[in-house]
Length: 121
Image 1 (tube, rainbow, N blue to C red):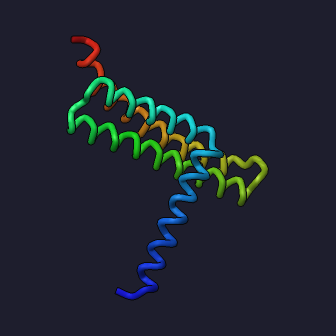
Image 2: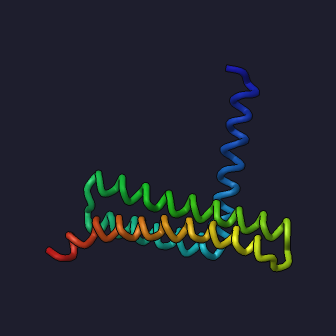
């Protein structure tokens, strides 16, 4: 394994952490989603969810954060390319927001499936 490969991977990780930090500290939608993820994680510890439920919850939180990050990137690129309103740019941004909506609904369903039994007993 060459030193360039290792140093390249370390740089990639550094940029990934920097991007995550920028998302969590500057983008309101990500801040909200991250806060919900923290609350759900705390709730998971308080309730004592199972290992399988932890896997599903972690996957749901990660997917919401990832898709929200991609949506933000699409919006930033679209605004950079065409800062003024344009119907085609609006269409693209709406589609990206729709992807967030789908994964958010999925995460809500996972949360309900996990937590309703704990609250209904």
